[in-house]
Length: 171
Image (cartoon, rainbow, N blue to C red; front, side, top):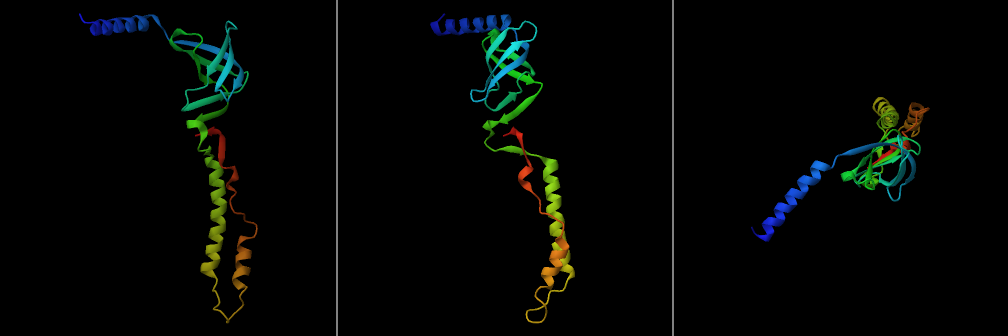
């Protein structure tokens, strides 16, 4: 048997040994502090009050910022208590996808409200323009159109799109 074949067989047997003896481990914990810059938290076990340090808040593509003192579930990787990551938090401040570079997700009900306001103003303008004869230059009052538009849009506001972003979930 060649050295490469023996090494491959040893690796296969070693991996089989590791997989048969290591079990997935899950812990109920309470979040005690969050370091959002490092994307880690400190937690305390709910049943044994064991401290967990540097618990990863995600793996980059999706990070979750739990509220301090909230209940969480963490996973223990390969049975190594020092290698843990957040699986679930009962309350979160932020869920960030792909570093949050694209800003917050659209708050759909707010977007609809603001689009409805804008559509009402545009519909009023269309109604005035299609229903009111516009005088030719030099043959009538140039303010007739302005007066009709002002009357049509009085009390209406254009949509305010400043509140349509939900910054609790970024992507």
